[in-house]
Image (cartoon, rainbow, N blue to C red):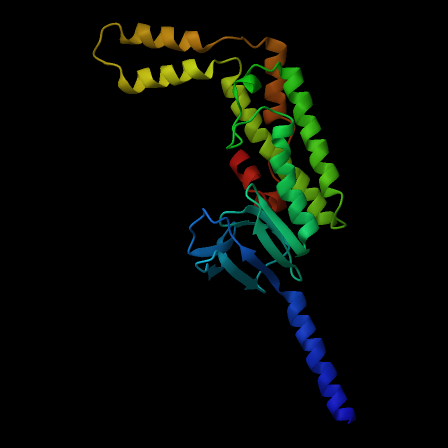
Length: 259
């Protein structure tokens, strides 16, 4: 009897240890994704892949990953670590998570989705015209509020690693938008489209081509940036961040693009 009990306890502990070492993600994808395979990827490539059934359901399970941020087909950035058992579904706008790890991943997705609470964006989360007309101090103040909002969402988790690197990653998501803002500040987007059409379709053999091109580009500039604002914007983009953070490099695709 004691031997049977000991064997049962060993089996229980062994099964429990295997479960603790695994990260599991299952659920259903956005019906419009049309994926036949889903994968978890890190900086080195695919960690694990699995087929997607006709109804969009899938199951990914692996004991080969460390805690960190991974890219998952159709979902974008997801936080995973051994012991997580996540179930996901698509609510028509974004993915939602339940299970162990849901707090972190719902906060991660919500923080990015809430960018449109601070800036005028289109359905694809691209800046609308009004964003490019914002004065630099106003834009940077809104960006800081976006970061603080994300930090508040991330604070729901007790995972110190997650809170630190989710916020750092979010700041590079914000920097990507700031880079676009710096490129198109004060420009009329419709006139920019006309300028690009001219580049693509105009007769380059026309003696007046260069003059027309210059005129079309000048017409795009509705608002000029002053030297102080330009200096502050460039400092935000290029001077106030660590370009040698190895852990962040492994965990943030936005940081890697920034580098």
